[in-house]
Length: 69
Image (cartoon, rainbow, N blue to C red; front, side):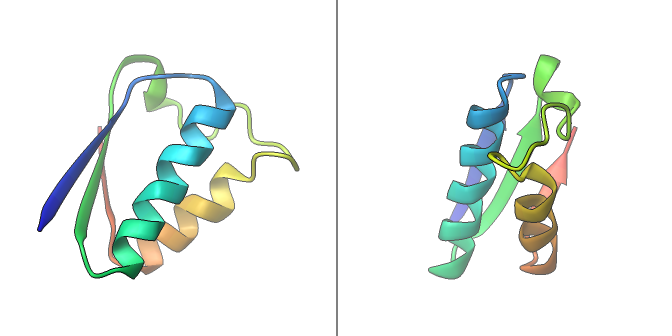
């Protein structure tokens, strides 16, 4: 199944969880696209030890997930 996640928040925890959810879906065999909209376009803003957004995004890309803006 093809799944689209629309990320339009600039809150680091929400961005981190959206990408984690995308990774979960990829691991169970789904095709996933994350569309960055509005404040969500700056994906790495708010990166921290608590919310390692870049690490999750790298895993998402390596797992053949698609990021669109």
